[in-house]
Amino acid sequence: MPVSDRVWPARLSPQAGKTLTQLPPHAQQMVADLLDIASRTPWGWPQWDATDPEGEDVRCASIGQLSLIYLVNGAAGRLYVIDIVWLG
Image 1 (spheres, rainbow, N blue to C red):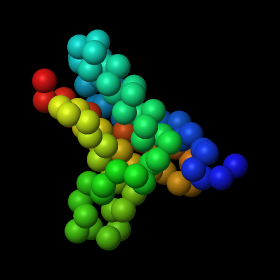
Image 2: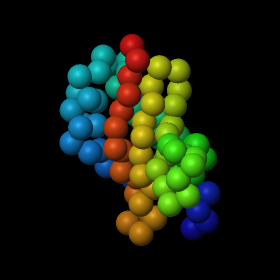
Image 3: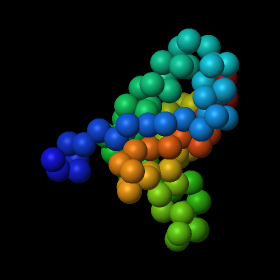
């Protein structure tokens, strides 16, 4: 399967999971939508810290008031959501 056709499963850190449960329903749906996009193009979002050459797999996916900071775990073939930021 080509990398572009691959869908990467995602796992949430305990902090991200706690944040998700505290979000309003429409924001929870936005998280699901954003994870769907990120799972199809994990490296398509900018690096969290572009000045860190060793941190190229830590990405920040953002839409409007919502940001997901995640790690692309290539060895395990999944995304690990480190934190969810909601400015709502």
